[in-house]
Length: 133
Image 1 (cartoon, rainbow, N blue to C red):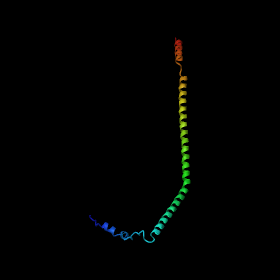
Image 2: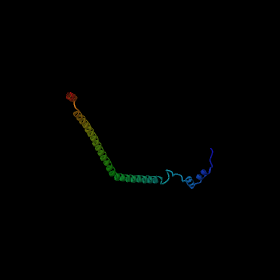
Image 3: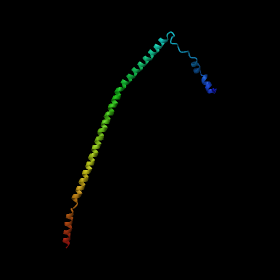
Image 4: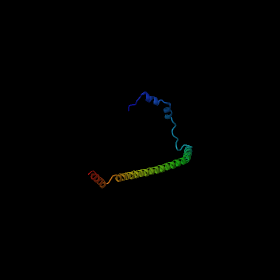
């Protein structure tokens, strides 16, 4: 294997952190006196830390829940109001279409009523022809 002796590698190996961690004390043996007491104490400390963390999280959650409920209720009310507004707009559009259709039918009827009937036009033409003759 080729070992790199670049200054980077040598500077990493010469750092105090590397020197301190390489000279660590060996892990205690399970049969050493006090090992299990220390292990139990460490586990108890970890358990109490986690229990406190859980209590803090539950307190935060209970503080936030009313705000979340209010926000959800507000969203629901807004959604309901938007639905009502959409229904009202649709009803208004239908009413406008019906009004336009009624106006169109009325206009067509008025035009038809205002237009002279063909027999009347023919009778008037005959009357004019007789008057001239």
